[in-house]
Amino acid sequence: MEQVVTKRRVLGQIMICNGCCCGRTEKGRPGIPLDRLKSRWKEEKLLKSIQLTVTGCLGPCDIANVVSIQTPDGPAWFGGIKEESLYDELLEWAIASRDQDKLLELPANLLPYRFERFQ
Ligand code: FES
Image: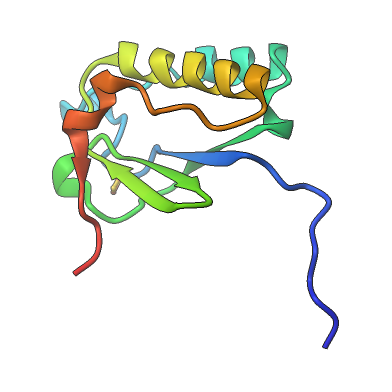
């Protein structure tokens, strides 16, 4: 079988959960600045470098809000994100990574929210 190859390779991919719990302010969950993120991602033409995917439930609703970041090193999961500013830090990280054409260290302020997803 021929090897499957995509022309749409990226440095990394950010999956922001916006499911039944994450971002559901009406349920008392923290908000997500989705409109701002989407418009800035478009303005900066970031999709060719860092894919932004807004998803349905990623699973660990008990620690909403959840973000998963996919890199060549594997996935990194973050939960319990309350501050909208952390999403802006991810935006800045994506811009800086794009500008340097390599994935930079993730924002330090995000690291305390990292958790293990798999058993
Ligand atoms: S809604 Fe985000 S983990 Fe379920």
